Length: 242
Length: 252
Image 1 (cartoon, rainbow over the protein chains, first blue to last red):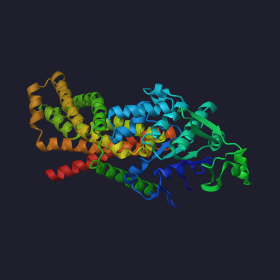
Image 2: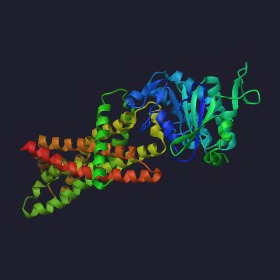
Image 3: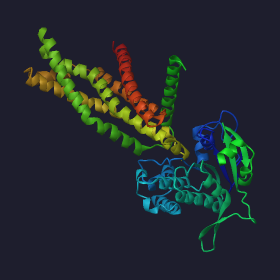
Image 4: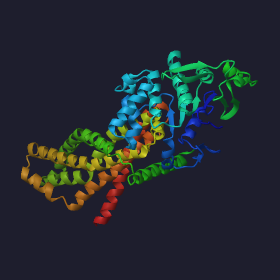
């Protein structure tokens, strides 16, 4: 499989089919038994942990349960990468943190600890943390799992915005078909006023920057658009969609 | 995997983690703040229990040994017996066992919780090496703080022994301190400080090893914590034998 800039690949599949493992392989957290992994034309399959560190700076990952550092506040979590790299002054870090938390609408939670946040806030904080350093690739591990429809919608809008306005390549692992279909059928547009609006594809416009991948027992059984996914003959896919 | 291969595998993994941790000390970035924080938590946090342990160990040592020494008419040597036993053996071992119970458990549960909540994966994903950030500071903290804690335990043990000797056995204070101090040689002090360095390394690394290899959610964290304490305690006792043997070989 391949993901291009400004493209989202949505990975569907039952539990244990290997969805999260694909994300971990892309980030170099686990090594594949066979096959090869490339990040922006550089093969990372057999790289050592230290060699992977600069490559990981190009990638942001949003973990399933957020995986925020529970001993740090939201602001400190977002600032973590910058403080660790020691590349920014405290003033610059503060500015970036506020900007990113503003993007995910969490400015008021900057001094809160993860244990004080709701599930949706944790995921949004996770997105803000993943966005530090403007990564060109974002990996989402079930970011809408267990969330209410309104919060899921907010997270989908963030993903769409990053894809369409920032040109971020992303892999979106999910069980949540509604979120997946939102990503495949809506796009973001920035108005001259700076406001961002979300529009749906219609008869005149078909989104081609979001494609689906269906996994079963560690193998890919489908790859294509949302339209072809819906019309697929495979009984497993039909069962999954229904 | 049968027991033998499982044990061999665990030894291999522990050795690899130890090697990577030591190697990481020579590579940037270095996390001095984390090292100081861990030293404070492990060192300062353990001082009180170590003081109590040392004090009462010294006291009971004086009580028990005086009874035996009395039958030889050598009760005056109580100070010597207390100081030699404490500095060479009981101080380092009991301090290590107390710290193993408190610190190895704490390290294993803290890192284990981070593993099961994917915080370690997130840390790696954010470009931080968990060995440098989490393991090395804890190893350095236990290795440097345990000798200091042992000195505290020895001192309080001697004081405990003195109080028992003076108030219960009616021994002369000057005699107690004189025999206690004069019996100690440079080699005894060296042995008493070498052991805690080895024990500190074992406690820190075992806590981190079981923490990092935690699987199975919160139940797994509990299992790792127990395993860390048990393994660290057993290894401390085993290492004590070998360090004593090596020191004795060099001494004579």
